[in-house]
Image (cartoon, rainbow, N blue to C red):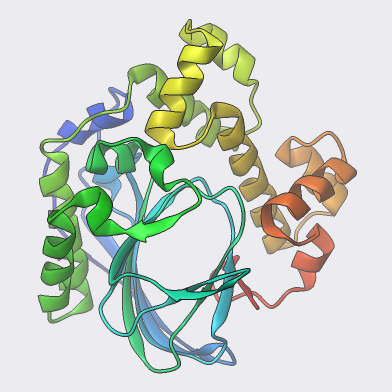
Length: 307
C-alpha cells in the first residue's frame, strides 16, 4: 500500500550535496506492506524523501519476527543509522557475536556484514544515508566508522538519545518516520557540507555506478591526487577508487539479483574487464562467487542473503 503526506522543510539542503539543482516539493510517499513466509512474519514501511535526495537514500521500519535469523548484507556505498525500538540485533564476526547498541551507525562497508536477529519479535528503524548526508549530519571524519558499527552516541552525541526517544514515543509507523525526518531536518539546519569537488565526484561515481575513470574526474576537479584522496577519505570514509569499486560491485550485484542477463553480460555492463574480473571482485567484497549468489536464498525485496 502507498500513502503520502506533506513534509517540506525547505530546499536549502541542496547545497549540502554540492549541487544547485532544484529540490522537488512532492509529498512524501510511504510504502507499507507485510511478509509472511519461510523467512519470518513482519510488516514494513519504506520512505524515500525526495526533498533529501543526495543526502538520505531512504528510511525503513521493520516490525515482526524472523525465523531465518542471520542475514548477510553487502557493500552499497551508503551509511546506515539503526534505532532499535525493541530487542536488538547482533553483529556476527569471525571470533564471536556481539549485541548492537540501542542506536548505532554503520559506515561505508568494504566487505560483507552478517547480522543476527533476536529470536523474539522486534521493531527496528533504519536511516540509509549517502556519504554527503552522513557528513552533513555528523560533521566528523567519516573514516572513523568505515566498515564498523558503532554507538550512534559516539558520533552524534546527545542527539542520538533524542532520535531514539522521539521514535520510541511515536504511536504509529508513519509518525515514527516523521519523527526521524524532523530529527534529520534539525541536524541539517546547522550542518557542514562536503567540499564541492568531493560532492561532484560522489555524484559522478554514484550516477555511473562506479564505471568511471578516477584520474579523469581528478583532472576535471583540478586537485592533486594526495589532496583529493585525503579530502575524500575524510568526508566519505574511503578513497575515490574504493568507492567506485563498491558502487560497481553493487551495480553488478543488483543485475545478478534481477536475473535478466548472463554473468558475462553483467561483467560488461557493470564495467569489469571480463567475467573472471567480476568473479574475483565479487568474492573479495561479499565472500560469494556470482554463481553462489545466484543460487542463494535472498530475503524478500532485498539482495541480502540468509545465512
